[in-house]
Length: 374
Image (cartoon, rainbow, N blue to C red; front, side, top):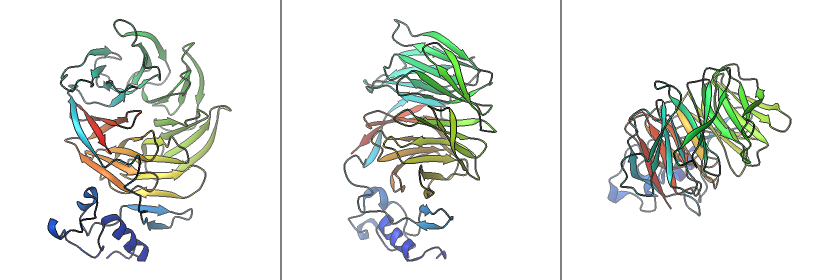
């Protein structure tokens, strides 16, 4: 028993696994307590706690999950794979239209558009050739009206696609001094696009005039991930310099900086406020309170956490990893809602606006569509 297994830990383990943490084996199915939710029954009895609360002074305690951790309105029971989109190259970026009909998969040199309203469709409805043929697309974002797609990747240029044209076409290109864009975000009013650059800058683009209006400078290595608060006033960015930073969009300045011991690969800001989830190169997911020093540290990934996305209701979020896992977690304390093991690294993910579908992009040259079951 690790010394950390205090009374709180024992309580947490009982809540988390439905039986005493002393049990070091999996009892046969007929001996299992029937009240254990099926998605937790599979966790072996001897598995240590995976969710920890970390106080301002660095004290770590296993989290005793509340009774409604895995049940209640808006909390999924599991997710079911319903479609595979065979893109043909590693899928580094995915996005879902609103309403849910089209999925956009970004691979090498192109974005493919899929109509998932007919699960029988095995080929894309269109292909958008962007960047150079050998350059990977790292991010693609739809404007809320669904008529414009912005694509960035291993090139100094972002391409803006007009999807409402009879055949999708590039209507503008935005060129920065950085050789690559790692991530994109769009302001809620669709007026501004933010681009995380490989040189650490965050480029701010006016989409109407197609001009660079500002650069946020602070990251000392590539800016890898980005999210924006629901009210459009604050930006959060993560970097390969082991920092997460927040920026005031009205005043154009940095507000906060959080320092970590690992590179930051992914992050998401909870749509209902208060919590920021961060995916690390170290395999940890950390959930920070944006105004208080305490946080949660979650340990279920076995390798780098490559992408992360909150459900629109804010009650849960997903993370994906180099360990082939898609994990769904309860906000903020990280009770494991479900887990799906894919055949290769899961590089990207998105959740539909109605929280009914998840799409992942894989190193296996495909995207997977999941239906979320409530």
